[in-house]
Image 1: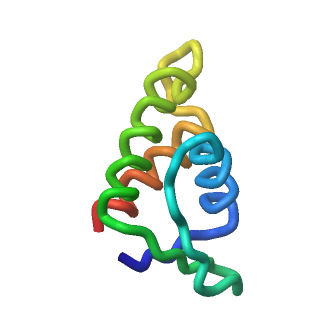
Image 2: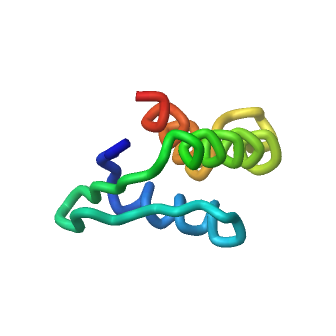
Length: 80
C-alpha cells in the first residue's frame, strides 16, 4: 500500500518503528512523503501507535498530547 504522510508523521513513524522489524520504502520526499508498506506492516504500526497513545498520548487532563495526536493521525492514515 502507498500512503502520503507529512514530514512530522514520517519522523514519528521512524521513531515508533526503530526497534521493530517493519519495512518502509520511501518513494517520494517532496513536501509530502509517499511511503510504501505491506498490509502486515501497516497493522504492526497501528498496534504500536495504539500502544503509544495508551502510554504517552494523554496529558494530566486526559487531553491528547501533540505526539498522541500524531499517533492517532497515523492510525487513521493506515486504515485507508
